[in-house]
Amino acid sequence: MSTEAEVRSLCLALPGVTERSSWNRPAWFARTLMARMWDDTVLTVKTTEREALAATDPEGYFWTPHHQASPQLVLVRLERVGDAELRELLLESHRLAGG
View 1 (tube, rainbow, N blue to C red):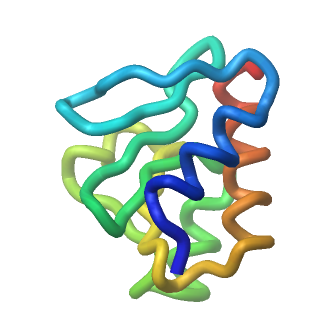
View 2 (cartoon, one colour):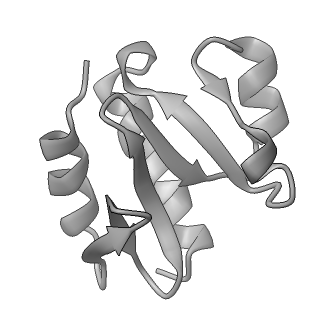
View 3 (cartoon, rainbow, N blue to C red):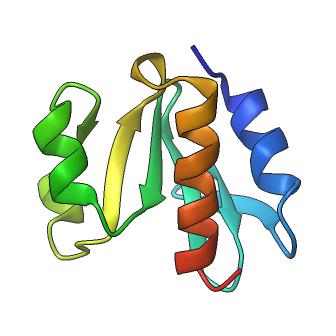
């Protein structure tokens, strides 16, 4: 399972990404929000594939009513994604956030 430290390292390795707090949790920004730790084991990212991801793994990809109005945001259980998939998610999120 990936950790917050690994997410941080991957995010900060991308061009133009900065870290700051959002809702009292670590978050990474390109031009806009790219990723945020929802809690210790769940990451918020941007994707154009939210519905498809949730359809293939509803335990791993989901959203709350809070995210309903933002169709690009999806919550990811870090224990359910491998390193390569996490990198891919963060690259797409970086692109969508203006990176």
